[in-house]
Structures are given as structure tokens and as C-alpha cells.
Length: 332
Image (tube, rainbow, N blue to C red):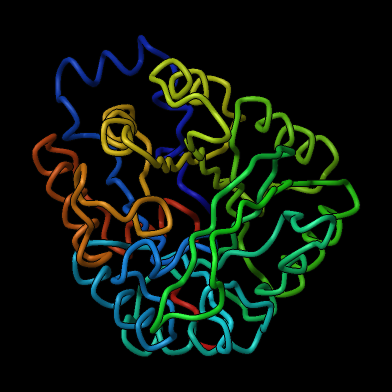
């Protein structure tokens, strides 16, 4: 049973928010979950040599981020024969999940890979839900339909896998058939979805899932991550406020941002009662013009900002309570 006191709707009403904020500041807010996306699927060491591509690197950086204060880690596995590209190998996800658990007994393990995106002239890659049988505790589920171009930089020696810059069109797609399959897989392997919304209209998908019975009381609290990326949504305070107020009931909102306004937006998100995510998937600079040394350094910055704002940082146990998760998963 989830604890309703952690739902984002509790701070969505401006009057209710002010009654608490004017008296206590952020000290009585729910502890902020700091997630860390250690390595995305788009850029790699060609953008920052400290980004972890290999499994050994990812496990170590997950461990370091956990020690720095992250209560959840988001993982993209790379192909062993081409670390510049995401893998569709479930066994690699199972291996990295297992090894992270060995080093981090209570860290929430979150894998990418459901909801679907299409690229390269119609090839669906990676395949829908390829990571779900690896049984992460949470899996991101993209619920948007959008298209944009992205530059994938050349990987110069000693890197390999892409010898020249590639401008690639990416088409996110989320069909009813896709989602029926994803929900079946999530239930089969007992994995909690984290819905990735890239615009206000994407929140309507969640409403529809509830109305159709695809999301029920057992899925609550519903975990929603608003993704403020310069390619896919306006990165503004108005957009963040609107997202909080339009969020469906029984949800907990997490916020990620990328680009120059990453940390201002994440700071606003903490002030408004949301959880936050950092990591080299979202940005590989610690400040303008300075490449970050590690994912732990990014987590430390968020912990420091939370401390300055006097908002408590969630332990792994508190994060599990906020998200309605049970004891740490032992077997993958």
C-alpha cells in the first residue's frame, strides 16, 4: 500500500503549498529522490571520456553515485562489440543489474527500454521491452510521439563504432499495440513503470491508461518523469508548473532536464516538491564549459543544492516508500 502523503498532487494546489511553504520552507517537504542516469543511449565517450560505457565502468559509477546520495540509478547497456550503441541483449542488462545489486544492497535499479522509439528509416531499435525480462525494479516507458534530429559524433581512436559524424532522425512512437505489449511484459516480470513524458499532452496518455484499466490501484503511486529537453519541449517555469497542476491523481513526479538550464530547472523542481534526476545521460558538464569527472560529481551537486535549500534527501529506504516499492530485489 502506498503512502498518499508523498503524492505530487498534495503540493499542486497553490494555497495548500503556500500554507506549508510560508511556515516551514522546504524542511517539511517529502525527501527528494535523487536519481542518476549514468549513461544514455545517444552520446558516449566521444562527448565525455568519463562516461561509463562498459559494464565494469557502469557498475563502479552506479556504486559511486549511490555513495554520493543517489537512491535510484537508471541504466542503458551498450553493445559489447560497439560501445557507441545501445544493446538489445537482455542478458547484459541482467548482468549489470546483478552486479549493481552486489555492490549496492538497497539502490533502486531502473533500466531503460520500453515505450519504443524508431530510427534509421523505420527500424525499431532497441526492441520494445528488451530489458524487462532482466527484472529491474523500475523500467522507463516513453509515452510520447515526436521526431527530431540528433548529431551522433564520430568516435576517434582508441574509440570505435562510428568513424564520422552522423545526423540521425529519431522518431519516438507510442502505439496502442506497443503499450499493450509493454504492460503485459511489465506485469509478467513484476516491474514498475516510470512513464517518461516529454510534453503536457503526454500526461493524457496516463489518464487514458487509468480509464482503460491498464493502470490500477496496485500500480500506484504512478511514477511520472517529466523530461525537459531542448529538442522536445519548452524548458520554462511555466511548463513545469503546468505539468505539476495537470498531473493525473495518484502520481509522483520526477523531473530531468538537459542543456544550459538543467540545474535551474532541477532546483525549481525541488522547490516545487518534485524528485529530480541527474547523470551523464542528461548532461556531461558540471558547469558551463567544464566536463564532469563522474556521475557521483553530478549527484553531489544536487545533494549540495538540496542542502542549501534545506530540503531533505531521500535515503534508499525512503525512496522505496515514496515510490511504493518493496524490499530490494535480490534476483534478476
